[in-house]
Length: 127
View 1 (cartoon, rainbow, N blue to C red):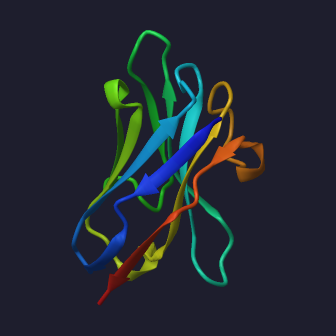
View 2: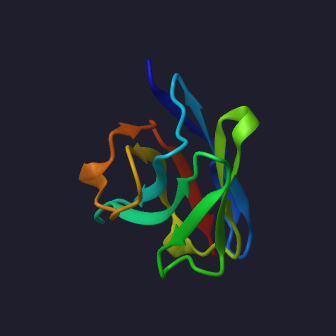
């Protein structure tokens, strides 16, 4: 049974940092694309970052313009986990954050094309 589980959300002051985790169970994401999305009240679901995982280890990372230079995606293959390090947070980053997996490469970031989703973790950034 494939499961994705996010954690690490919370409340932080503007300028602070958080690290989100996504643990995959019953699923090996090598050769696939794992993305981070967020959705704030009254807004569309927004793609944040993604990583394509090479079969031999490592991979390529991709970032939305809104988070480039502030967020970093990484992994610990031994723990079947993917992380989103979020720095220099501002109130516009407040949202429910989700990890999601798409079979195959990161061809695009249409959320409807992603096959597996976690339940989300809330991030709140105050001024």
